[in-house]
Length: 339
Image (cartoon, rainbow, N blue to C red):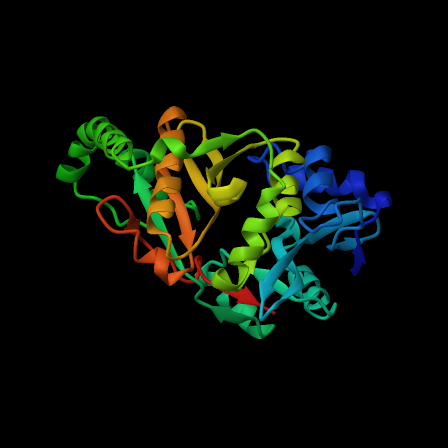
């Protein structure tokens, strides 16, 4: 067994491997999605480049893959290049080999700053062996429109839903009624937010996004860079999947705030929205609630079952209060891992 870097010569076999190990993900082996996600980055330079994807191979056979996405993080008054670990997978018939260990060893010795989230508890010893640093970075908050799909998703073990113990039968009988009443209550509450209608659905990323991020970056640090280039890669260059950009206008043509809503759906189980980014001054409570009201209004339009927001800014966390926003952290799933 040897570890090699991705190259065009391996590309078709990489896509075949990904289709096989991710049979329920129709994008895993899609050529356009792979090239957008791994060959073009969220940095200012979005020209094609060799991705940081490592392969464990024997002859012409791929045994496993480690894949990362290049990104930028603002911290300590400067921009740091980082790589997010998004895939470490080994073919089922080779999981009794050292393929995973060899892939991780190659990744952590490549001289890059690596980040990861969503690490399940059973894999913690694996990360500890390679001296990843575990950092609690924030909280996970949920705005529930329909409880039953969220419960079903949690029981299915989805990393984007809160872990939920098995509910008593009496409670489950009330879920259908809650599924009908809660959307009405949330819609009425969202409509009552002052200035909610001033939030706009933006058809494209405005140049003013640069000014907004530069004004806020020290107040939000450490934070991924959400300037115009990063948002255009995330939203406009995306070949599949749906993201929406909401803007809150400010004085003098400036942007007061931005929010990115990622639309997700598991057919037959649930549809939900991930607030993939929210940029607003930490002390601008009215602006923050207007943006959330705009996000909730879009959730109603798309008939979503719940919203999920990761938030690491204490001033904004304090504004996410029950019963409208429920905090449910799942360490280590919600923690950041740094190498």
